[in-house]
Image 1 (cartoon, protein in one colour):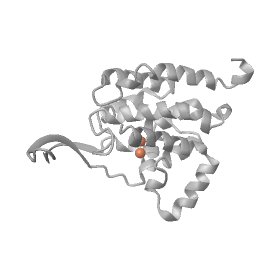
Image 2 (tube, rainbow, N blue to C red):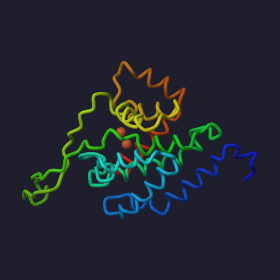
Image 3 (cartoon, protein in one colour):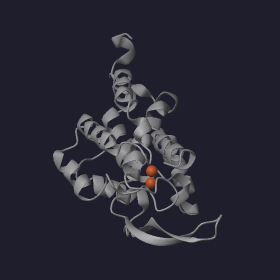
Length: 220
Ligand SMILES: [Fe+2]
Ligand SMILES: [Fe+2]
């Protein structure tokens, strides 16, 4: 590729990120090697130039061991970390079809994908629950999570509020984090506002789509 075709180096950067993610992406599931996934996460945080205090904040508050949900997707230890990396992986593939690559801030893209669900950190409590086996009808005790999160603001806005103590994203990516649930967590009166925001910032639709593919299609 000529320099003329890749003025801001983003084709090159996408290649670097793909090389980092490809060998580990299949570990991002319930039975995967989560130590390897956590190492990749550290490499990605360094790549995105986050301050060391942010890594400590994540580690101390359970980001790498929390689930991504209580039931719907990745409801197991390490689920939040695995979900976040899968969103980044799908996001990388969507960039060429959804964004103008010459205007992309690749480091903000990485941070927005990895931390769009920062709101979930510390929001799930592990508990023993009695669950009835649908086939045998017997009751078994299983490890499950209960949602205990109490954010004062909307889901995406709380993620952004938390990350903004450590870094600020450019406008397209702060919009993407704040609106990443799309119409799912949006009052009907705000649908036009969401549509206007997506038209102005396609990054919102990219993050929402990558999130849906990981969470709904793959269940991670
Ligand atoms: Fe979310
Ligand atoms: Fe998500």
